[in-house]
Amino acid sequence: MTEILALTRRGALTQAAQRLTAHQIIAAPGYEGYWLLARAERATALRSLTTIDGMPGIVLLVDKPAHLAVFTPVPLYAPAQLLSQHFWPGSLILVLPAHGGDQATVAINQPGEAHLRTLITTQGPLAALPLVDADGCAVTSASAVAHGWGAHLSLLLSADERFRTPAQPSTIIAVTQRQENLRFLRRGERAYAMNALLYATGYTC
Image 1 (cartoon, rainbow, N blue to C red):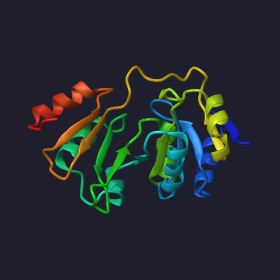
Image 2 (cartoon, rainbow, N blue to C red):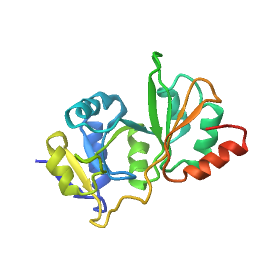
Image 3 (cartoon, helix red, strand yellow):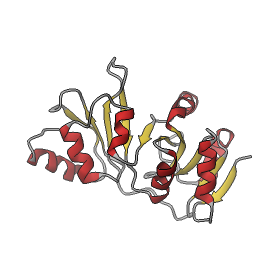
Image 4 (cartoon, rainbow, N blue to C red):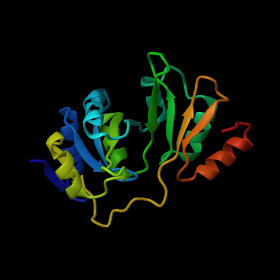
């Protein structure tokens, strides 16, 4: 049975870090709902769950731009760097070229949630898999996480029952090898401000 600890309980993050160090999968609140989390090198273990449960893709969580070099073959392109400087930490997800070519990409975010940043500080970059229900809505109930994904978890960090999804989803922007080529994959929180910043600095999206 999955162990459930309140996120606010003393020592909860220490236990979470220990499980991650042991290459186990945990669940914790993210920006829009609960996420499955594992160390970045264990991303394949999370990816296998996407085909089983029909969940969305993996987002790599980083604590600083220097971590990006691990996942993308070039420094942050100018527009991506501009966006990260103004909107990270936060809900913005950047989709960048990944190592290996073949038009592979990687989604990266620097989260604003304090507990996630604490775990990244101790563990390094994390792989996160946002949980959605059968209707495609973010899972915001700890009991729903335990019921639907408990078999895959060693620990569930439970948020306050008042945990609610934000008014808008995260914004996702793709940056390709051509720096001037940016594309909104999803317009969500602060998308208007991001678009205005890009336009003001000579980029179109």
